[in-house]
Length: 400
Image 1 (cartoon, helix red, strand yellow):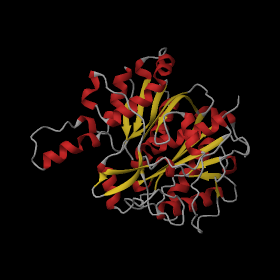
Image 2 (cartoon, helix red, strand yellow):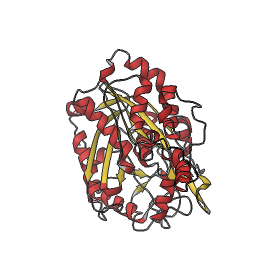
Image 3 (cartoon, rainbow, N blue to C red):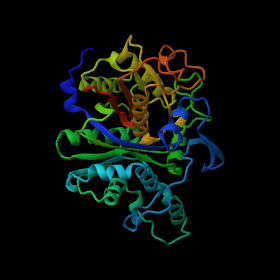
Image 4 (tube, rainbow, N blue to C red):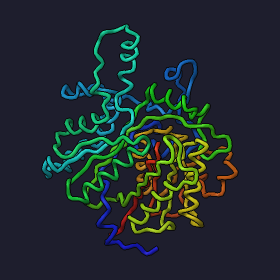
């Protein structure tokens, strides 16, 4: 499809700096190695669900050891994971944003857990009447994440948190792009952060959605998800960058409180809207990162949606959740970071799992060889959440 580059230029925003922490590691090199090799990156934990072990995508490295006194009330593992990611690009961000007014610097982040895990023991003791101590609620408020990073950076523009379950991180990126295009900010820190907690694990367990082993998206024997934790942060601005956030497409099918529309109508609508907003055709997309949770219903509907949108296009697809776990509010951010690295490197694609595929879903171009056969310019990332809160992002390299 012939694209209108002037149209793309009006909407696209540059990814100036980015960082991501997950079970894949703490930098782009570790991430690439993990996604192009067969070795397992998940870990078995027995401290999250009583009486049994579960596979999770835990971040394996240490976090910042302390937070500033001004952030004491918001202190949590969630915040420390965010600050650990921010530390990798903080010097560059502060230098880049120094010419701008603080009132024109914004923070929009996604999360679904906030600091809940840090209060779980205190809440248990409280409800069992073993403690009269007050439970500090500030750290687990959904809005605390963006406000804490705003306070840490000393910025004074818009700051808010998006919590739409598994699409939160991607929606924060789309919201940041809209803020820039509306000329309400000069730079926006966007992304998503979520950490492991018992509430989340037990909640998905009650839905019978957890896998008994390492998940196999679109696999013949898929039986559910693995939960993960991650932080993905991006500084966006209108200035061009090697990789641009071109567009987003959002939909709300509201089919069921936890199940997706069986025909993937909302998912297909989100992908189509993203393509239309970017001025691209389906055949322009070189790689598609699936939402790919490994639940029977989600994978089936997503492949139907892909078939609807991409039809005969031979787009390379894979899910990376067998490597990261499902990182909930951070999923869209970590998977956008993966797409960014693919576009920057131009030598590899993330492997889909190597297990047997569901025969009904197998007629797709899954990435089973990590070598990128030819350069690509555009990548799409899907995130679909409870209630049908869907979003697709398109990242791309735009030549002058």
